[in-house]
Length: 68
Image (cartoon, rainbow, N blue to C red; front, side, top):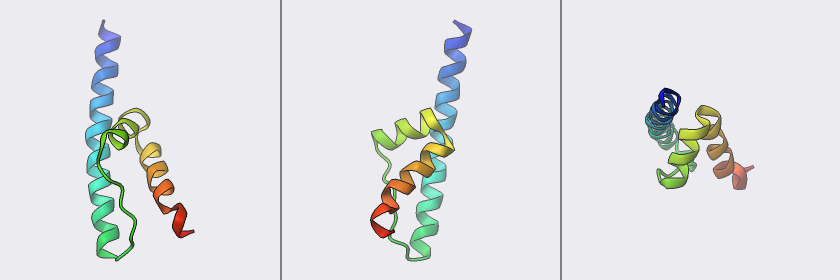
């Protein structure tokens, strides 16, 4: 039971930090007039919660693909 609670808390912490990172990076790109924005939706929240920072980098990579 303790292990399940630890996994849930870990997921929620990564989710909250992931949203904060996405918002900050979106604002940074907006100020630099770079047209790359990751929306905050169920998919991005799930990726941020399960994969953490590498998942967020993957989201930005997927959004940036058309610009390469």
